Image 1 (tube, rainbow, N blue to C red):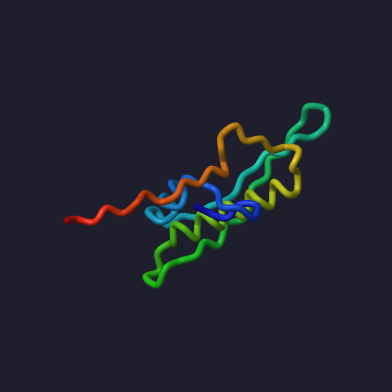
Image 2 (cartoon, one colour):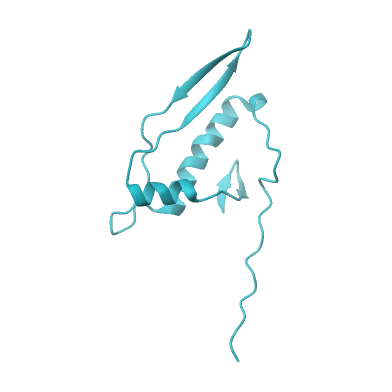
Length: 100
């Protein structure tokens, strides 16, 4: 769960896990629709991903950093975004079952 546009939202952590496993630069990439059926592709500089005390990329922090980047893009061009899935459906943690 990450903060997305001021609300808790689900995020797939696979990108954060890949960043941690391979310790490689992570860039944001977006396509902006332009008039006359044209498009502009933009690549960000490498994101500064947070690290844990051992120096490894913090998966949760990385996912928040990536989500913050996308949130900025959405705010810049809100008319270009549409989610067909339930992005803000956050499930409560399952109940803990105590052994007898």
